[in-house]
Structure formats: C-alpha cells, structure tokens
Amino acid sequence: MVAWLLPFCAALATGVLSAWGVGGGTLLLVCMTLFLGVGHREAQAVNLLFFLPTAGISLFFHRKNGFLDREVWRQAAFPGVLASLAGALAAAAVDVSLLRRPFGLFLLYSGVSMLLSARKRAG
Image (cartoon, rainbow, N blue to C red):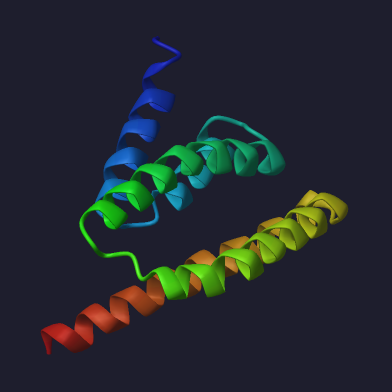
C-alpha cells in the first residue's frame, strides 16, 4: 500500500488539533509508537520538532491579537526553559520502558478527567 498515507494523516490530524488548541502531540506520539513502530525517544523528538513551529506561529498571532500577557510570559519563559531542559535530560537518562507506563497512565488520567468534566457540564 502507500507507506506515506498513515504518517501523513497523523500529521494532518495533529496539525488540525493543535490549531484548535487541543494537544495534538499526544495523538502524534501514540500513532508513531503504536502504529508506525517508532521508538519512544524518537517519537518525542519528532513531536518536539513538530511543536516548535506550531508554538512559534501561535505566539506570533496571540501577540498580534493582543492575547499575550507580557508580564506572565516574562515570568514563565525562563523557568519553563529550565524545566524543559531538566525533563529532557531526565528522559535521556531513564530507560525507555520506564517512560511508557507513566505516559500511558497520564493518557488514561487525562482521558478520564476530560470525560468526567464533559459529563458534569452536560448534566
């Protein structure tokens, strides 16, 4: 079959979800690790590379439309960069099999939380 079709559809869906403000990177990670046979670390790297232009464009348009609180951005940028570096170093030092379970549990927790909050809003 066409080898590029599934990765293309996953990237397209991820881009659309990201544009809507939903964490499309989670979909990209799951698709790459479960369906495309990509290793967890490689999938994280691709996810980060996919995220960077999306975040930059979003930041540009939020600033342009007046939705960027500069004071909050100034306070959050440096600690965010430090935490990202620490997380990357920790992820590189830990065995990949140890990362899968916590990530799966996080996905389950997130999904259940979203379903319960949607149910409360509907009821």
